[in-house]
Amino acid sequence: MKVVQVKVPESVSERDVKVAAAVEAFSRGSVSIGKAAEIAEMPVQEFLFELIRRGVSAYPYTDKEALEDLVL
Image 1 (cartoon, rainbow, N blue to C red):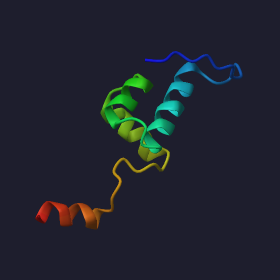
Image 2 (image 1 turned 180 degrees about the vertical axis):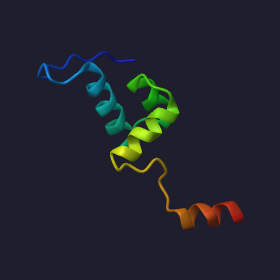
Image 3 (image 1 turned 30 degrees about the horizontal axis):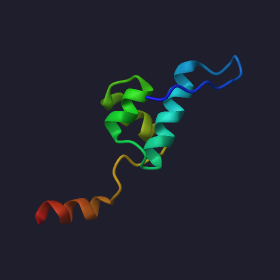
Image 4 (image 1 turned 90 degrees about the vertical axis):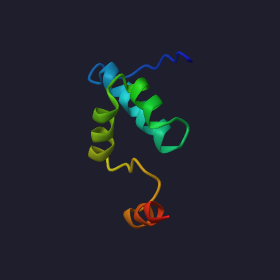
């Protein structure tokens, strides 16, 4: 894994930076949900809640599309 150093204001925690980076990487499709949770250093379930909190979809399709896939 690559190590990156970023200067941020004192008011921003290391955890906030890791979570933001993980959410961004996941949103762009650069990493899986499992890898993003690993980057954020949190369990997948907690990362899923973080995505919801930020309004980011964890799945790239609508509920209707998911139901159609389940029927097939």
